[in-house]
Image 1 (cartoon, helix red, strand yellow):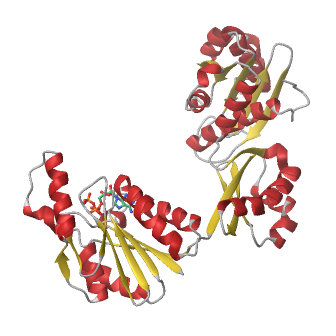
Image 2 (tube, helix red, strand yellow; image 1 turned 180 degrees about the horizontal axis):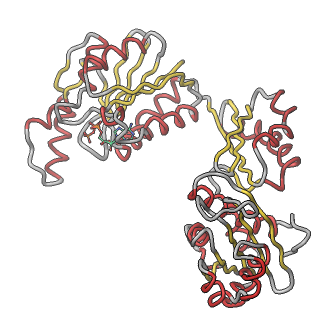
Length: 418
Ligand code: ATP
């Protein structure tokens, strides 16, 4: 069975909102093992919607629409679906009653326009909306099914989960597509592909798909199987082989960001951290404190942006700044030492660099960043070179510093055993 997702709304075409419904439904269909070959976006126009649906019905057996089910004139999905199937719209009494009840319960006055939402294509099955007034519906015709859901994600998603997913599960024979994502830092996409080229060439089930963005490479392993447990069994040996070859660069799985992994490692090792930031301006502290419970290990974040602040807050020596410059290995190390000491933490982590677009030179170009770690007895610094706009350089620098700490905590840096 081939599926197609229809997103209805002129605001989508104008780029005023981003189509998160299609992304959500794409993931859900994959999870249910249903192939989705097309996504279509149509404005709030019944004729054009009907025309696009007729075309889609020639190639797809399942169409799921979102949006355009509300009470206003520009909500035309029910009319468009009815036209595509050559059906009339008729008042669906139980849905009308549900709308009256919901409005009364919320103390909203009932106006006849609300009933527009209860006009469904004749023969359609209504899908209850536990959150809002607009019911969804499902129409079957000549082996094809159109399922229409409201636009707001907080209404659409529970309806999909409660009414649509169980129906589709039966329809698809109960299969599933399951993915697991391995996340890598400190290694480029092409080098990863090179290290995995035999696995990629031999891939079938699971498939292996690389995806790179902003200093992060993701490898998505996707298996088709009867159920999730079987899919996990198919993925496990391939994941184990990838880990055997590239363990040092793996920073997490699925949605796990580097700050999550660093937080987990610090907690496991019962270690505390203080951060001294220059070019990232507090971004490392921000990322670490996005994780609930960070106070277990994160003691302080100090932004020493000017030379004066580096001296006053972090104890960086005047002479080091004069001899080496603010963007230097030596200053990064002194910042890490200073942060650790002033906060009384086990570890100090620091960065200093040139985020651009101004301030670079031949010797110290834009994108040059030093990351440093200091413990009571050891210290280590690494140089990074990033490219891109200012915010991207800051983002990559924050990730690289956190990744440096992860590598130290996982024992990948012989120079610094924590
Ligand atoms: P309502 O009863 O709220 O009018 P509706 O089914 O008519 O619901 P729309 O009017 O098309 O839905 O959209 C209402 C809101 O839902 C949009 O303003 C937007 O916030 C959200 N929405 C609609 N479609 C999408 C989409 N594809 N992705 C993300 N959000 C969406």
